Image (cartoon, rainbow over all chains, first blue to last red):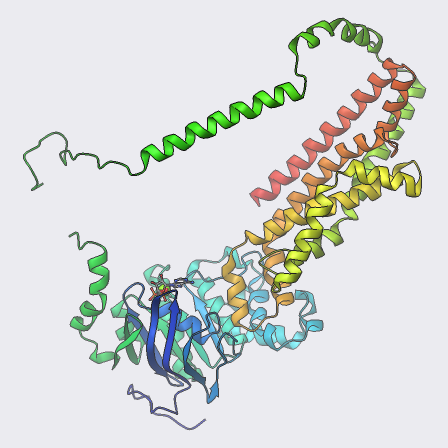
Amino acid sequence: MPAQTNSPTAPEVGTATLSVRGLTKRYGDRTVLDGLDFDVGAGEVVSVLGANGSGKSTALRCVVGLVRPEGGSITVAGRTVTPGVPLSEVAMVFQRIHLVPRRSVLDNVCAGALGRLPLAQSWATWAFPQDLREEAMACLDRVGLADRAHDRAGRLSGGQQQRVAIARALCQRARVLLADEPVSALDPAAAESVMRLLHSLATEDRIAVAAVLHQPDLARRYSDRVVGLAEGRLEFALPAEELGDHRIDELYAADYRAEGAAL
Amino acid sequence: MTTTGITTGGAGRLPVPPRPRRIAAVGSAVVLIVLMVVAHAVAWRETEFSVGALADGWRGMVEFLGEAIPPDLSDTTLERGLGACVVTLAIGLLGTTFSIPFSLVLALLGSRTTSRSPVVYQAARFVMSFFRAVPDIVFALIFVTAVGLGPFAGVLALICHNTGVMGKLWSEAMEEIDEGPVEALRTAGASSVQIASHVVLPSAAPQFVGLLLYRFDVNVRSSLVLGLVGAGGIGFLINKSIQLFRFDEMMTYIVMILALIVAVDVLSGKIRHRLSDA
Ligand SMILES: Nc1ncnc2c1ncn2[C@@H]1O[C@H](COP(=O)(O)OP(=O)(O)O)[C@@H](O)[C@H]1O
Ligand SMILES: [Mg+2]
């Protein structure tokens, strides 16, 4: 990997680890994504902002293969993503975290590797090879939870569970990490620690991170660039420090109208 | 408050907007009630339901009870009854346990959460409906002709029927789990089998065990009825004592099986309660 400066400017098209061009998705006659373009480069955190229903989740779910887009192209590290087929280089974490609460923390992290394991080594947790367990322990150590490996995942706090989900993504050996409102359900302290972790994964491990956030303040402090979505289109892409309040107000005006602006 | 001059509570009053489609709802409720009344009237006639016949028959019942009480508490009857209770329990146990693998396979193939192919899904659903729809007593009669009178026919009958019922219950339990972790592992590239083994089964495990205990409970009761048609156990003894007009013996057997069923019911209920807490 070439040495890169930590400049927050947009990477050139073609060098971006994740590159989305002209992404379109319709549900019935409703156009949810309408020719969306955005890039995420290795080593940067990109915040995705936009009003409710602007298509943020749908865009990320297209990249990760959970939703099949009708048009456009998605490339990850130069490889074109087949619509609806997940790519091992791309991992996703969710607002509702989605660990298996009854399984141990370590087993949850190991599950990130399922895509590259033959059934003989993955039909049950006790079939997992030892080197996978050790790799998963290293991933847990990376998120600061190595001491909780044998606890049931459901026992951990929300912030800890989100870090376990991130460790699962690391165990998947993802180069692109998509986070759909990763801190919306967390208390402020937990949110800070998760955002710090995402930021350090970008700067230290050179992972391309895209996170849907609803707090402009977190976006400014932890991301390099900010992209704004409105009605399934890219509204703006800016370095984080150039994100002005008026941009935010415009972007979320639809939400204020929907809530009746009853103030 | 800056609205009108109305000064009742803190926020004044507003007319309640009319609820839409009120009349249509009342109309369909009336139609439904009329249909239900007609259905019950027809059923009353078809079953020859008659309070008079019940009142006239009370003398026969008293006679019957007079012969049944006191129950026969002789050692031979108690011993025979106890042995038959064990057989009844054993039929229920094997019938439940040996249906687990079949139920599991059918449930996995016939649950939307784990089954990717619509053809396989529909086929599994059909097989489960079939085994559920055929009553265990019909299976018992078929197996009695195949393997002869006795408890083995009862075990086979329960395996067949329970496979259909438990497969259905388990597939529904799997459909009720949180879809989130399934999606999360799908994005990690996990296959359907891996997702079943690492998300669906561990998530549904408490429900699986609860339903298994519930089915054991039901199957012990079924095996009593199966005994009446010759599939061994205490039901078989009850049938024999009726044919020999030994109602006192029959009473002993009924009390014993009652105790057994209550014990199984309480025990499985306790365990299921524990599971739902955990
Ligand atoms: N599976 C679906 N079926 C129908 N409509 C959907 C589906 N998923 C999302 N939508 C619609 O697409 C729009 C964008 O949704 P989403 O991407 O979740 O927005 P965001 O994450 O920005 O709030 C919404 O109007 C939503 O109702
Ligand atoms: Mg969303």
